[in-house]
Length: 180
Image 1 (cartoon, one colour):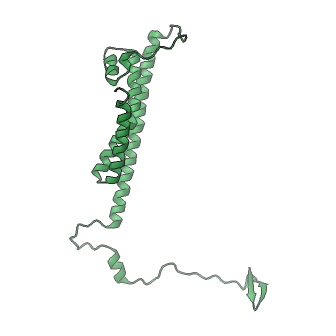
Image 2: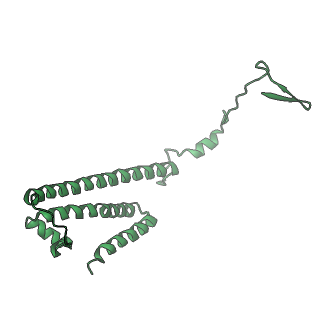
């Protein structure tokens, strides 16, 4: 370390240096201020204090995060299982057939709507089972938006309700608009 002595710099040795500790908060705080900062148990006021409100918001946010992560995880697992099951059934029946890639064949009319896919699954179509799995995969994030909307309505968080409603409206329009 260096020390300035009357316009001259000199070096400090280890014996000349001192360590000072400064308290960050006063040791003797005013008890009246502490009493005002902490809510008393004797009050009958039902007002939510900022500490409790922040804790409640954090708990609700964590609960929503856990709920949405489980929804996405299990939705994708269910959709993948249905596609895998349908794919195995399809390959058992049509696995030995040669692939014909000379001409493009679009999906038949029964697979172009969710109702048609359900009818195909109920009739035992293996391609219908695969299509049902894909519909479940598409429905998983839409259900996430619906669940978020319900939670935000319950929390009376109207800004997020508005935003989530706009997102849900855009998703539904993009799905339904393709059929009309």
